[in-house]
Image (cartoon, rainbow, N blue to C red; front, side, top):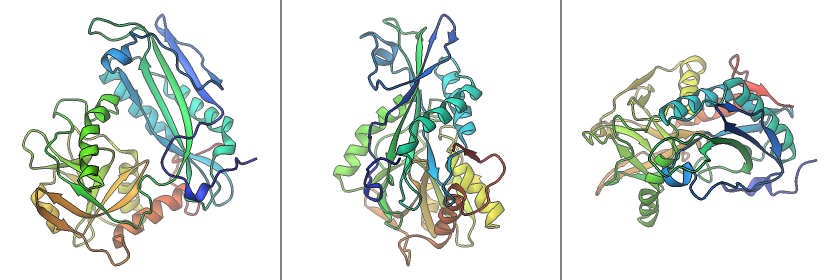
Length: 339
């Protein structure tokens, strides 16, 4: 029986659900893991995660489809990306099959928190891992905990037709050979000051340039970015310090295979942004959020949309969410049925 929640008015925040998955890594191997009702994490005051931020995470969603099935979108790619994060951060790999099974089991255990179809809400799933044993010297932990929590959420940016405003900050997101390409917690800690400052200045998000030359578009603090050219080509930035977004990857496939649009991943100079006709952020949390303005120290570039969202952006959004919600046939392997 569904929980008594005002699904249509949910924000993007944490609501504790009944169960979470927990598995510990000790003596060189992962235990089987289990579902727990205890939402408290107990670790040493000297745990590796607390001393040296040795942690990574993922984010994905479960949905109720038009035919009332509960499904999950491409968890295999989240497992792959967490493996890449663990390799970069000297953390033990949580096996891919175990990851997918744990995601499914955690969703099933919290099935009453999966929002009904048509509410605009989803069940957000957060797998994460951290160093749990005491570490005082600068070195990797030897024990780890892998957990999955869930929480019902509404849109990351409230209202998909409200175009947001970005600013180019005086901060860098990631170094060219740093950790920008993995989902490390430390990347997001580094972005907190910049996003608070942006909000204080009246902007919705930061648009980061490459730290080496500060001439090329990279991504925002919490999402990748896409542009639409005047002739309807879908273009995304290419950089070794950009997080490989599963949503962006899916959108590019949708653009090419479902909408018959030309797609391109390449370096994008900041000076080019005035030449595009549409711009949007993309990611698991936001899906697609139209960008109405980019501000760089007084220099403004605006995108004007008749309906608050660009025509191609709207087609991409409607097609991808249609696939996720079961209104449009999905490519093989994209949808994992839970119940």
